[in-house]
Length: 280
Image 1 (cartoon, rainbow, N blue to C red):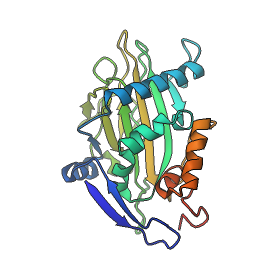
Image 2 (spheres, rainbow, N blue to C red):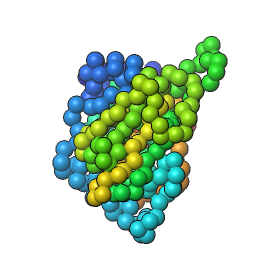
Image 3 (cartoon, rainbow, N blue to C red):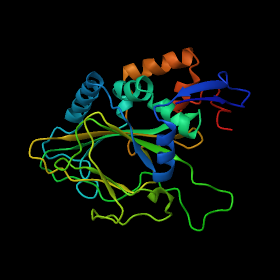
Image 4 (cartoon, helix red, strand yellow):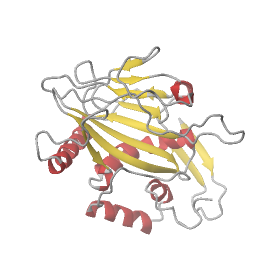
């Protein structure tokens, strides 16, 4: 579904922007109400293989030991931080080619920033999973009279199947409206949904939604998950560790700057054409 926005900032060169999203009106309504939606179509086989190969290469370099992990408990597994700065395919394939960026713009407005990216790798037989958690914690009690929690959207792209053996995705519908945080356990919750996903399938999730990843009990299958977190440009990006940009990434940025590609520069937190005034 397409949405055309007009931006009322004098310093913006492209004030009228049309965003071609992937969601139907019914899917957008379900996302707003339940806090998540599973896209009808996933990445094609070629793009899926490209991302999987890139993830494997980064993981092999970062985790040379067979037992190396980023975390041992609660969020056990291997994490690759900001992979899009190291391999450009994590940026271009899902966000630009597959229109994930425009899909998010259709939901929260035309000017968005990529807050962080990561790949989580859970190895066969590891039993690695996560506890109930949220990706973003914006709520307070009581709710301010004028304030509303800023919306952050997590995009989960499954490079491998998430099923009963490798670990499904558990979500609690409508919990994004709950000001509390879940107890950090892996126990079942009343009303939870258990989602099994095919390789290449994509889930859009309000980042305040309660969710967890099931443990990988498969004897021979790895589960790799690419997560992209996006919000309005008025919210600062973050990551858990810094990564050096690759030469390809730097060249991509240079082209965007030369071409004054405002949507891409905003996406990468480079402020569009005028970084001084882009945030007001």
